[in-house]
Length: 248
Image (cartoon, rainbow, N blue to C red):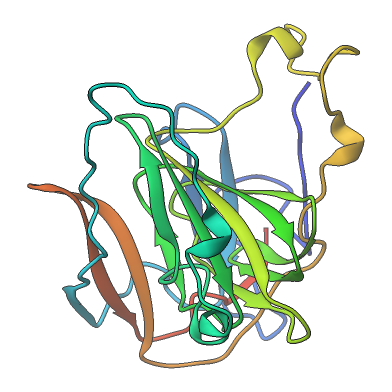
């Protein structure tokens, strides 16, 4: 069973002309999990999505891990990582602090009160658990309100930013995978439907309900990606705002 979502007007066939009300063409972008051979989304932009006007290195926080050897139990007091008012100047992207990791996954904790920069993880999917607080995640797929208890899945290479609500800090656990995050196969039928014994079902899933349009020029996006020495970062500058997806 294919899980399909549509927002706005789309052409009746894929990879065909899709015109705006003024007669101009939308620019089609295919975001695929494994190129053209797996799940994908088609987005229709008002501007060329691949246009880049500048690229500079982005120095990430230290990504090194210290082996827990000999193996010892650990008690992680994560609430003590941030001072009382430190969260007011922190954001979910640059303020996260890595506490555990291995070759497959990295776990970070963050307490944030500021809007994050535009960001995408080109290494793998991210799963963000909202421990407390609320806010909005703005993405190329649209805006998604989040609250305590939500698990937010951000597919690899999804440009987004976090906007915490002003009344309280947003506390979140960030799980960064090296590939894709999918339901366990034991919870899926052979057609892809969640089975009765699965811990969640399709009714628990919700996504953006309308396109997110934003104007802007020379817009910076921070990208985490693999490099010669491991995980590194780049700052891209786009001539138009990435949030210019009219339909998808």
